Image (cartoon, rainbow, N blue to C red; front, side):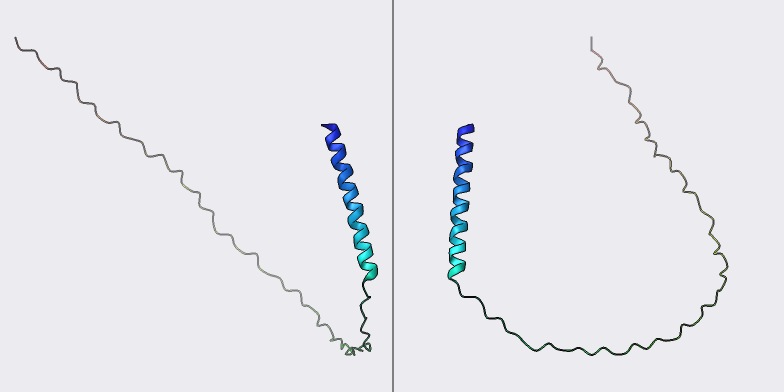
Length: 95
């Protein structure tokens, strides 16, 4: 098993190297793309006008009244009524 794994790794390595070489050769033959150079566009920044900050007046808020918490009434499980058993009647044997 070890031999098979080792051979497989070797094979993959060789294939990687081969593909890498093909890619490099292909890229070296390709013509470089022409770069389009345009004049840099200047963006004018508008002068920021600072507005005078209004002073915040501290207002005291009355604490909100909490509504009394109602406790959920614990519901009792509905008790099952026992089914009344009918007394077993034995068939009387006739003499």
